[in-house]
Length: 505
Image 1: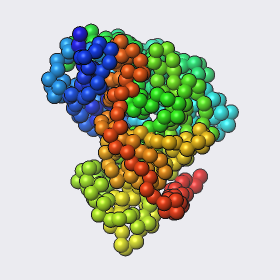
Image 2 (image 1 turned 90 degrees about the vertical axis):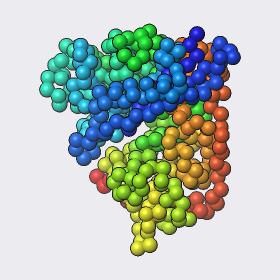
Image 3 (image 1 turned 90 degrees about the horizontal axis):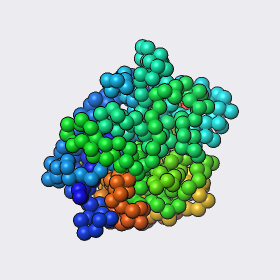
Image 4 (image 1 turned 180 degrees about the vertical axis):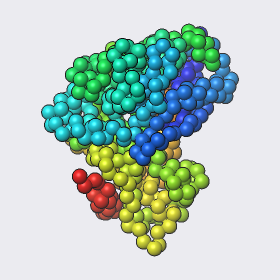
C-alpha cells in the first residue's frame, strides 16, 4: 500500500507541494513527517491601484513545478502516493469555460478592492447587512468572493449570458485545481471555501437562493459543496501524476492551518503569519456570530460533522515586509528584516499601521490606508523595520482581543505558523503585546500539514482526529515578558496610530 500523501498548498505568491510520510509501522497512524518539499513563486498582476489579479494558468504551472520538485526531493514516484490534499488561498475567484477549462479573465485575488463601491452600495441597506451576516457569518466586503464573481460576469463581454446557459463555471482556487486534476470531470469545493463566498448558508452548508439574488450570481456557475475529508474525485490526464489518485482532503488555507495545528478542542486558537495574518479559534459545532468585529466560518467538515470557528483577518502581514523589500528597498530579502530590526532596542515611538489594503477585522475599514507615525530625524531603517514587525503583532493582538471578548475569557495560548512565525523577534513581541503564551511547532508549515492530515482521514489512512493530533508537536514557547505598564503604553500609541489611519467618510 502507498505510504505517502501529497499536499498541494496553493498560496497568494507561490505554490508549495509537500510529500508527507505515513508511518509504516502501523496501518492506521502516521508520523506526518515531511520528506519532500518544493515551492514555486508565480507573478502577481496589478492592473490598477487597489486591484490584484492572478493568471490561473501561471498558478497551474507553479503547481506542476512544485509537485515534480517535491516528489524528486522525496525520492518518491507518483505511484507511491496514497492520496492528495489541497489547501488554498481563499476568496480568490476564477470563472472558466466548462468546455475548454480556459479562464474568461484573470482571477480576482482576495486582496483586490475593485468591488469596494459595490459593497458600499449594498451596505446602505441595514436589512441586507443584517440578513447577509445572519446567513453567512460574514460581513459585506470586497474581500469575499460574491462581488468578484458578479464583477467578472458583468465586465467580461457576454459572460453573464454564457453563465445563464451553464457554459461557465465559478470556483475558488481549490475548485479550479480539482477541475484541472480530474480533467474537468469534477466541479466541487469544500465547505470551508464555500463559507468564504458570501453565498453559502453557514448553518445548512448549502448555497442560498436569497444570497444569490442579493449578489447577482446565477446558480448555474456554482460548484457542488463537499466535506473537507472525503474522496471527491481522482486524477485524470494530468501528465505529472498518475491517473486514479484520490483527491481526499480540501480546506481553505486558514482552516487547514487550524486543523494542522490540532486545534480540535473548543477554545483552541492559532494564527498564521503569511501574506496576511489570520487568527482562528475553534467554537465547536454551532456557528455563533461575533459581537466584536470577527467573522464566523466553517472550520472543517470531517466524518459528517461540521466544526466552526471565529476568524479575524489582517490583510497585510508578510506583505508589509515585502513592501520594505520591493517598495522601499531597505532589505534585500524578507529574512533580513529581523536582523535589521534587532539593530535597535525599540522602535523609538515609531508606529506602522500596515493598512496597505485597508483594515480588516475588527475594524473593517476598506478605505483605510497605511500610516507611519512618530518619525523624527533620528529614525532609521532599523526603526521602521522594527515598527513593521510590531505593526503585524499589534494587528493580531486586536484580533485576539476580539476573540477573548466574544469568548468572555482570555486565550490561554496561541499556536502559530506561517513563514513569519519563524521570526523570533516578532513572536516574542506578539506574546508580550497580547499577553498570551505563543507556541510554535517544529514545522511551521501547518497549512500543508493540515491538508495532508485531512487527506489521510479522507483516504482512510487515519481513523479520526485523535490519530492526527500527535502530528503537531510544539517546539518553542514564547512567554510574555513585558510589564503591564509598558504594554499599556504600546497599545495607547497603536490605538492613536490606528485612529489616524481610519478613513474619514
